[in-house]
Image (cartoon, rainbow, N blue to C red; front, top):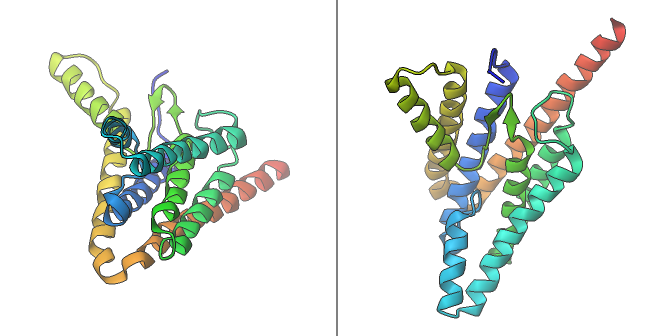
Length: 226
């Protein structure tokens, strides 16, 4: 189904969610084991290496990282019941969970750094599974492999002379830009704020959740009045 129009709330939401994930992933790379938390491909590769070299502590930790990401996705599936983007879905619930899990990350990292970061993996699993499809476009906000693949494919189609959907490629550029900007923000602030930087994506997730509920209930009340 073509992207005949791309609602503003999807554009803004995709950008801010990608920005959020970009911050969290950079913060994970700054902390224990330089650990990626927003995407699991590299972690599974390191899991295989640790198994072959038989580093049981590292293997168990990486297995927990992957499992926690899956648990986060499970929460989103359980709450939303559908991966297609519609405004009627209660996105405020998973966004609140993301904020709570990132807050737990910030709370636990000074005392249990290896396992405190697992809560960030759960948070990114929740966020990534929140939004998956919009009118045929695949939307992932915590990693860029699919986004960059689609950008490259679309440019290739354009050069070939095929018809492309500009809104689809614009959406992917928004996600790419958001993730990049989030990484830049975290990289700039971490040397000064250290672990306190985790409170920024925590606050952003909470603000997104509150904003969603405000808009949702206002829209619902207007519909009732009509």
